Image (cartoon, rainbow, N blue to C red; front, side):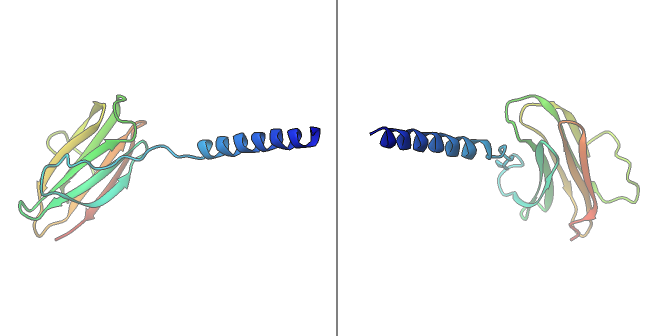
Length: 140
């Protein structure tokens, strides 16, 4: 009888350990695009920017690209940035319509540009100023 009780206890401990392992190995939620650029925009590229994701979208009806950077931790204020412009040979970002940066709870952007027959520079930032920019891409 003691042997059966002991096996039950061992099985319970193994079950708890397995459940703890499953819970511990989960990853943080990644940001998802929720249509922030408006209707008719489809995601054509994504970029991991640390604690968020920058989404590049395109609308065939308007011919515009749009960028929005979405936080991985929705509702928690953090530094977020979205960058978008027609491709230039310089790599210096200037204030204005090509950057939206600040402390936001959900997303930075959206930013729009018409780039028919041209290339764009785009990117984003999340949390600890982790910035990524792709230069001279998505030409068309």
